[in-house]
Length: 565
Image 1: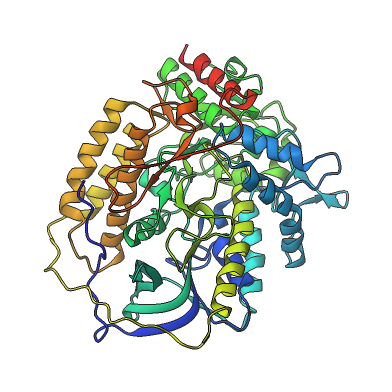
Image 2: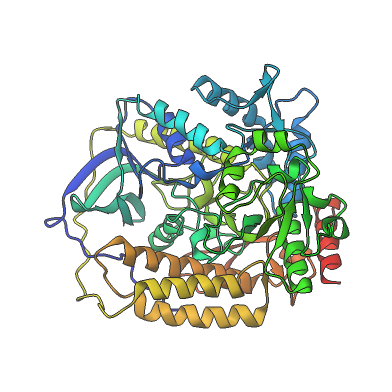
């Protein structure tokens, strides 16, 4: 495999401006800002964001935050639901610790000014696929992320030790003697800048834009995973991309997510003939976990030779539908559809990257000096399939932990004001190939990933995809581009290649990873598949605890078998 260069751009200590900070945070979504809020106020914090603070995936979150706040609910219920959805790959200690922090994190957001939806003076709790109880706190009906981020951004702006660098692209993490020392960044105003940091926290989000059909914003291109990979940090579970079952599918329209809470409120999924089909696939019907529902929709689309299925809410109270889902109703209305009365065309789309940079319980990566939090990571919480509304929760919990742990390490150093700045350089290798149509390569990559590494995969299709991507890597990765369009494409290629290799390596079906040529789920594959630059073979990390024959995994396996039949 052609690995490509260690650094994407040329730089030298006498030709690039320098900046110094105690804690550098890459990413301004919920995980990144929660990390910033947790850093000791005596330390300088710099938050670098590719877009502005409104451009993160956190802003787009519709459903809400899962947490045990109802007296009728129990921590053990939420833990069990998460482990069941994770199909045997969750780390139970991680799940338990995160779920137990949820009520405190929700209360914290309320104290910071988040206005969650209420009914009769109490939090209104929704229910989504895979949850046994109503436990989803939400805001503005179906715009939870926007309200949560509003409150967190306002809180972060009050911190005197915090500086924001918006519209700034991170090209690479800087390492010296096996330690992360900061990052090389770029913006239009200053060009390249070396930002030296005692500790760096990666919170750059996911990789949904690697797929043609995606719920993710434009910036979700896997940059953080590629940064960590080139710097030598360990990654794992790269085969596990979660596909959201219900993405609005209208020609000419953006692929808007239709929140899981719509099905939680009682919506049906029907085929082109108006026939409800989910009870045929799983006893939980529309409230089955996302992997089960996405597979079922895929089967029905093939069976009916139709490009989508439909959400039907016509049997529900129209006033409730418009009150609870105002954002989605407004989007549908732009295309002449009434969410409460019309059948809404939907199909799966790439939604949430479960794999990523390997972290411990405090967000430490395998690379000293580097922490990570949120969707860019593999923490052990989600296993092989993420339970709905556990993502914002993970960002809150791990963002806080990473911020605290990073600042504690800085304050423990003998001289808190001393920076070690090595004379690193990366020479220029020549002019970039100006004849390359980067947009065409990007579109071709996204289409290839959707066809061959989507909801359903096979060994033959994956091998073909890998061969194609390897070819693109050979002539794209060696180039030294001068702007984010080129660097982002290089990151997408590196991450896509890891995803394909991981999907090829896991010769079974588990969670969101469906191998049509390996439908069984086996104990021998109850492992994490890890990756590190320079290692010729994947790293296999066995898990201990709940066996594959447990009701959780047996139920998921039975659902797959029913679909294929």
